[in-house]
Image (tube, rainbow, N blue to C red; front, side):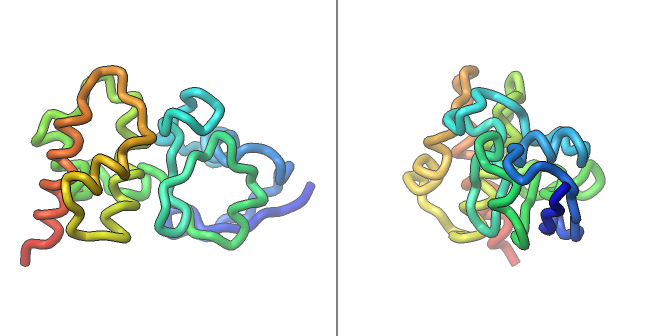
Length: 156
């Protein structure tokens, strides 16, 4: 079986698997990452988003071979219960969670945006979250949460 090496949440990984399997399948199966969710399976809903480098990308339709030697961040790498990321704190403060299914992918989209642009405008946040589907209708609160997290991260 071929091996694919990459960094997952800052830890070097060497995965022996079919390189054409989806990254999502490897993350949730072999590596036990439950943050990225399976949604549509076609890269259209954003539930499976992870950060590759500094971009949020769908992992359900991304072959494992395409992440060789790259940095991957899943929701598990964003923060923890004891040390939550500012985005996680802001989503709670703004009550931007309803059913929660889409939130991990939305957090990844927002974190990738803040990585590239630490002071986004409201329109830039909306554009960054545009490919994430939320059937609960929480997008306005999510936009407020991202802007709140950006402000917190910019504070001295």
